[in-house]
Structures are given as C-alpha cells and as structure tokens.
Image (cartoon, rainbow, N blue to C red; front, side, top):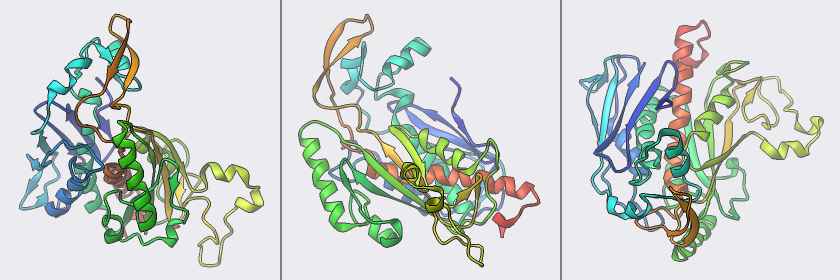
Amino acid sequence: MAGNIFGNLFRISTFGESHGEALGGVIDGCPSGLELNFDEIQYELNRRKPGQSSIVTKRSEPDKVKFLSGIFNNQTTGSPIGFIVYNQDHKSVDYNHIKNVYRPSHSDFTYENKYGIRDYRGGGRSSARETICRVVAGAVAKQLIKDITITSYVSSVGNISIHKSYQELDLSKESIEGNPIRCPDPGTAEKMISKIKKIKNKGDTIGGTITCIINDIPIGIGEPVFEKLHAELGKAMLSINAVKGFEYGSGFKGTELTGSQHNDLFTQDGKTKTNLSGGIQGGISNGMDIYFKIAFKPVATIMKKQQTIDKHKNIVLMEGKGRHDPCVLPRAVPIVESMTALVLADYWMYAKLSKYSSFLN
C-alpha cells in the first residue's frame, strides 16, 4: 500500500489501524536542536481524542504518545523521530456484522476491491483514527514554526453558520476551547450543539465546515507552478477523512464578482485594502492573513437501517453499531491545524536550503 507518507523535506510516515495494537509514525527531516514541549503535544492530542464530550464518540482512549527515537534531553537530534500511541478501548465485536457487508459511503467496497482484503474492524487503515499520527507530527511542526499562528474553529454545522468574518470574532484559545463544538461565537455554538444532539438522538449524523486562519506568515512562501501554497494546503485538507471541499480567500463566492470588485488594491506599505486573495497570490504568500474553509460530510455510519450489498453482490439491510461521532467537526479542528503546520514546516525546510530567508527571520 502506497500513500502513507506526507511531505518532502519535513516528512511524516504513519502506520497502524483503528483496532490494531497501536498507531504510530516516523517524522523525518526535523532539524536538530528543537526543544520540544511535550505538554503542548499532548494538549493537541487531547483536543482530538474521543470521549471528550457528549457530542462525540464515547470511545475512551487516553491517546498518550510515546516517543521512541530522535529526541535526547528534550531536544531533537536530527535523526528520525519515532512515536507510538497504543489502542486501549477498541471493541472489534461491534464490527462483526459488516465482515461481509459494505457500508454505504465508506471505503469498504473500494478497499476490498483494490487490495483483495480489508480489516473491517473500525475501518482498519481507512479509519479516521489514523489522524492521531498527523496530530503528533503537526504538534512538533507547530513548535518548529512557532512564530506563525494557526487557528481553526467550527464555522457551520448543517445549515447553522456563523454570520461574521473571522476578524469580528474572538479567536483566543479560551473562546474556541470554551465549548465542546469549538465555535468562537457563543450563541451560534449553543445552536450547533443542540442540532448535533437532536441528530444523534435520531441515530443520524451531520456535517459542516471548519475555517482556518494563518497569521504572521511572511511574504514569499510557496512556489508559482506545481507547488503553489494553496495547492499544497488543499491537498493536505483533502487528505483528511470526510473532507469534501476546500476553498481559500473569496472561494466560490468570488465567482459572483467582477474583476474590479475582486482585485485587492495595494497600499504604500505593501499591504492590500482587501484580502479576497486569501493571503496568496500566484501561489505565493503575500504577507496578509491566509484563510480557508474546509467542508466535512456527515459521518457515513448511522444508526438506521440502510440498503447495501454484501461481498456476493446480494442486496441486504444493515445498521450501524458501536460508538461513532454524530459530527466530526469538533475533533477535526486540531487535525486541520496539524495538517496546516505540516505544510508550512515543509516550506520552512525549503527556505533553509534557499537564498530566500524571509521565512526564517
């Protein structure tokens, strides 16, 4: 199986399955001498772990990371950083009923047809539990690019949205982490939580969007052809389980404007009066805030009977069992930030090797 490595110079390779003994990875390319704050790494994992509120899965995992290599006296040595997170609360019996059945909108059908075999316990390698490895690596990447701020929050659940720009919101840690949905607008957060609880009680699921903002990023990050900054960010976001869409800057709304309305006019200090470009022009950062939105579909496993097929192509009815998220959004916030950090850390390493050093100042 290919496709388990992300990044070029700052690179993460992951392994493990949802109901296997453990998940883990290797971070390759992290420079030596980076002093790590392990509490911050665990904090990011705690934001992603299951069982943290009534609107996420009840699976109870401590998600404690153990580092195996590449660190000495709390500092990176420059060698590969190996890490592992053990699974402790997996109940594989909950998945016996889909051993020979393909769940609608899951990877069961495509996975088995491609590889001739699949681990049906929790989705195996296809499970969103794999993202725990991304969060570990992303937490290290955040500390490498510590002068850049990455902030994400839930901006919509179903048809309930924040009707404010990110500049109008309090994006402090206290504001975002102050409620289980991780929405910085208190009134909207209450409506979102209520919506998810109602959907959950019906045995159904719901999707929504997450908005991410990158502050304090210097000019000149990204390449103008195949490695455009927004293209790399888009690839990173679309690699996350359940993501169905990515837009940056004005996004699809920008298609409704004329060029004269959409153009970001420069001021004498090199800034722009507006930022419909989303902080990226020609694939390269222009020094303004970078902001983008990611769309997440409803979780495919629902507690209702649905028509599907078994491995012999017979029509059957199936119903989800076990513990599942009614909405992935609150736990996906740290995953979005981690993937963003991994993209920027890779560009940071490129900057170290080039004459363009604005990223390093």
